[in-house]
Image 1 (cartoon, one colour):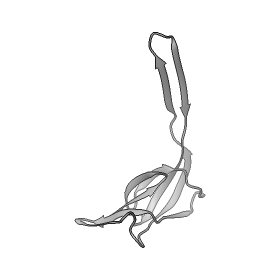
Image 2 (cartoon, rainbow, N blue to C red; image 1 turned 60 degrees about the vertical axis):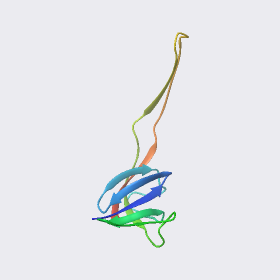
Image 3 (cartoon, rainbow, N blue to C red; image 1 turned 180 degrees about the horizontal axis):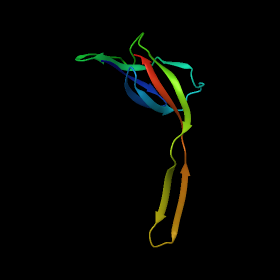
Image 4 (tube, helix red, strand yellow; image 1 turned 120 degrees about the vertical axis):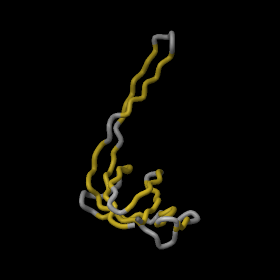
Length: 102
């Protein structure tokens, strides 16, 4: 099965056709098709091609399945013996993608 490693939102993802992944929010509507041109590596089996830094002409296309917010992340700060503690939290905006072609 062919796979690719691409970059979006400051992170790298290894995907194959048919995979569903959650990435940082992309400005696209549900049902839109998105193309990623920053492909770092791709291969099938033992054959792999690595870019420097990207592979020319390679692309990954995906369909936007959902726009949502992730679970809450809690940042808890605490100083022992001082009676000091602070709780903060946030929820990241995410996009769920279904990979259509590599």
